[in-house]
Image (tube, rainbow, N blue to C red; front, side, top):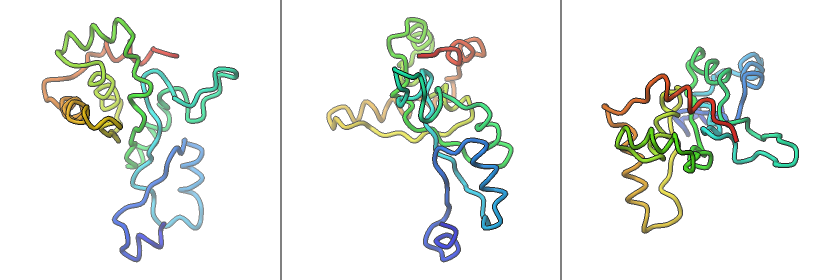
Length: 162
């Protein structure tokens, strides 16, 4: 990847699902000439979509990895969240109340929580073409300058576990 960058074939390089241990090893490696610009990781309120119900072991972690987010911030590596909607607890009554209080959807609250935790979003419009416009509107509504979750709301959402 570093060769592709130095050859001008790409503008930036990144990694996926790296935790602090992985990032420290990468940055310390003698072959690393360029640090990754982005670390794309699964992140959602309700935890990983890849948790085993039998063992409770999660492939990419339980929702959010505070240590890795902080490490990325300190080292100027963008933390990009994917799979945000798979762990959005749409059924949670208090999440619904938070959404209504802000005039937003539950999906927008889940996206906003991700942004306020310091990540950027990797989003899509789903697989149903008839709903793509609605999903796009939800995605963009997340960036409303008047929409910010309170500290109390963030603390509640941080505490939700599967």
